[in-house]
Image 1 (cartoon, rainbow, N blue to C red):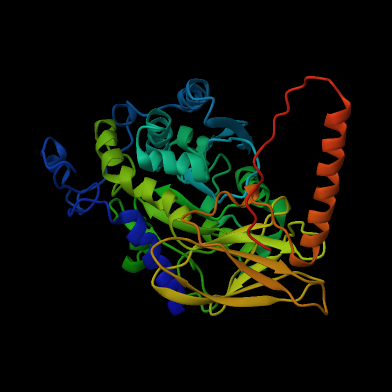
Image 2 (tube, one colour):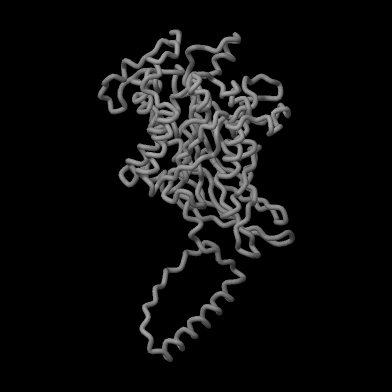
Length: 457
């Protein structure tokens, strides 16, 4: 695996999991505050058989209808920072609801977007429970907690509590057609998976969602790692697993890796979205009384993982020099075999990078000259705008090192050759205005907004 990808992984793990207590999450240890409580009793024997999924065991978990009520309750309770929308339906017609968290929900902004997906496998329900708790926590703590405020005001967080409601209702891994949704995505090494008409409706919903929302990063929450099955070499799925953070690639050309048709590889290749697969529970169905414990052990990690989008990496916009308009160019990092596209609306791009390194960043667009520059990523995000000229002209690279890149859409870009013309027109307008004021006795109150700060002159 390329060293750049290992550095990228280290960034995610450092940002996301540095807040965990010293003990392994969800497998014992003390309360994060050091007060003890019932957390010490959460230690498990990994060799213990997973209990059968009985009605007693699932008591306390939300049904699909209860989950839908909980989703809409969040939208009703915090309408100023949330939006509830659907990305499609399951095989059995259950709506796949998403909670968007932002200070401007539903609006396009030059901000990064992150998504959480839970319950990919129907018999791994912990993710759906903790994601509802995450949305409620952000709703309760906006403008009270600095991390909650950072997330709400500087990014768009999308939460899909369940991708596989039919599998959950059936208490099995696959969906209603008994298809493993995490093997159902188009795969770079198996073209047979590329036929979209054969994909499950839940899979198609995710694919359309990713193409529409322009996500920068993502995480799917699972329980009980399937990696153990591959290591053990036997044909039976294990009853107990391990806590795992898995990242691309899942498959390889020589078939040494265990997963093909996985969601995270498709996200990275086709959506430019770096996704982690997180095993947050060492059993599939922990008792419902343990869910608050699992939430507390993972809360800060989940928040920090999302917040890492705006705390580090390189962010910016790509503009056409001749018009000053944003363009949907492409951004690449030398040494990283992945290309991301800027958005069509604002030309904004967002790329996760490990801190403490220098990178060569290149912006390109068909019909324009490619421009490149080197940056050093420290502990804070680097803001880097590109102004590209048409073929045959000289482009510009604009550095604007802000703590966060999320206000770029509020900045007015003036290009040097046009500055004198703009000033001349402005003087004419001012002169006409003064003459008009002298000749009229009307008493209107004029409200003027302060000009937007230029970053290119």
